[in-house]
Every structure is written in C-alpha cells, then in structure tokens.
Image (cartoon, rainbow, N blue to C red):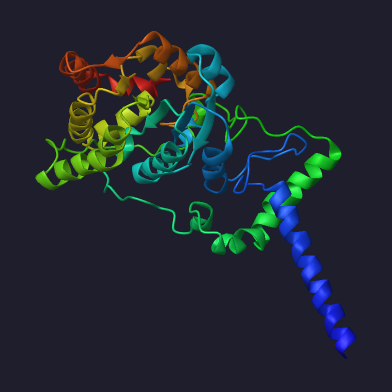
Amino acid sequence: MRKWFIGCLSTIITITLVIVATVWVIDPYFHFHKPFSFVSYRLYNERYTNDGISRHFEYDTIITGTSMAQNFKTSEADRILGVKSVKETFSGAGFRELSENLDRALRRNKDLKTVIWSVDLNALIRDKDYDIYGNYPEYLYDDNLWNDACYVFNKTVWYEGVLPNLIMTITGRERTTFDEYSAWEKELGYEYVMSGYNRWEERAEMQQGLSAEEKKMVEENIQQNFIKLVNQYPETTFYLFYTPYSICWWDYLNQEGLMLQQLEAEHIATKLLVQCPNVKLYNFNDQYDVITDFDNYRDREHYGAHINSRILEWLAKGEGLVTPNNYEELFEKEKRFYLNYNYEEIFDE
C-alpha cells in the first residue's frame, strides 16, 4: 500500500512538473519570459497575448486601438517612422481598456517613447468605463505568482496556445509576425458596404447638440482615458488620430439626426487633447478622396489595410495635424462639408 501511494504521488508530481515545464517553456502568451528563438509562436488572442508583449518584447513604440488599427504593419511603421514597434490592438475595445493596457506597458518599459493610437469617433459619446467584455484573463495582467495556476493548468491555454505552438514548432512553420497579428483581409467596395447598411428611408429631425449630461460624458471619457494617461508620461509622444470612416457613416449620422451631436463631441475631445504638449492629434476627415471612395471600405467604418499604410505616411509627413491654432478652422471646414454633402448621390450608383 505504501509503495502504491508513493508511486501514485510520484506520478502526479512528475505529470505536474511536466505540465508546468511545458507551459513555462512554450509560454504562448509571454507571461513568464520573452519569446525563445526556437519556438514558433501563433499570435492569436489579443486579450491573452498583449500584456505579455508589453512585458517581455523589446520595443520603443506601441501601435494600439480597436479593429481600426488591426491592419497596421509594424514593418512599415518601423521603416516610415524610424521606430521599433509592436502591435497591441483590442477588437471592440472601449477607451478605458486601451488606456489601462498602455499604462501597464508604460510602467514596465521605460524605453517606450511613442504610442500610435486610433481614436474611434463612434466611441466619444460613451461612458468613461464602457466595456463590453466581462471575462478577462486578469491573472495574466498582474504580478501575483499564486494565480498563475490559472494559466498553467488552463484548458483553453493548452488547446489554443501551447498545443498550436508545439505543432507549429515541430512542423517547422514560421511564427506569426506583427504584420499578420490580428490583421484581416476582406472584400472591399460599394456592394460590401451597402450589404451591411440599413438606411432610414425618412430622414430624422436633426438633434441640435449634446445635452449637458452628454457633454459631461464626453469630457469624462477623454479626461480619464487620455488626458490622465498622457500627463502621467510626459516623456512619451502620443500620436492620436480620429478614425476616418466612410461617407456612408456620415450619411448614417445625417439620416438619424445625430450629425451635430457627433461633431460637438469631436470638438470637445479635440479642444481637450490639443492642450497636451506630448499629444500629436491628427484628423483625416478632410481626406475626401479616401472617405468618399467605397473601394477603401468593407463597411461604413472599416477601411482596408492600404489605408492603414497611408495613415502611417500621413503621420510621418504631419498631414492632418491638429493644433491649438488651427483646430477651430479645421472643425468649421469639416462641419460645413459633412452638413452640406449631397448624400443622395451615394445611392445613385
């Protein structure tokens, strides 16, 4: 009986050590260490992977944002801007999630000097704590060794992380690059945009602006998730840009009577952000050749990868830069264009 007990205990300990050692070596989400050169990594699940990238990769620049930033290529950013970048995007994220991830990265990496961050225009009029995701792998975000058991003995981590990486390594497949990480390729063009757009047949009455409560919501959203962060890290330059949605999105605002509210929210955000000396704010809503060309879009908001490439070029050249001296003039120009655009011609195609 004693031998049987010792044998069972030894087997359990051995299996446990093998499991721990395998997860530590493969470490699919870079929780324990930087990537090993002999392992082929599949960069796959953003909310599992990004914190490990922040912890253990070597970089001086982070590209972040929602799905609007997923098609950026770090190889292009490095070449165009002269940086060493990683990509940490979060599909569907609110501003708070993006801000908190950047805060963790900035605390851990003193070499992080540049942030490229897409600011979704459709997320301005939201609560500062907006979040549609309820189950985060928070055990990956902290430095508590005890809850790492949730990582090591996690079925999902094994099935979606450890085993795919082992198979890729054994079969000699290349690891996922940051150019490929989270990137998507979908058909672009008029028919694809319109297939997902349900337009109101009758135009709603235009709302004349934000309520006092809505104005406060926008201000708190920007203050908590942008201003507080950038002020905390004055040595880091934040390249923020408003996402250039298609003309179909502006038609949606026009048809549903939300145009003036959206423009006022943008004005409030801009007025706050341009006051920060380490923020370079860009607005590409005057890139009309892009915005009015449906061949650039897969739906009313999402643009193709070639537009992400153009955005990097615009950032490098300073095109679309908003400053305390020009933001009012640029805003009035934008307001005139989108309030007076002939949206009906969109549907004559």
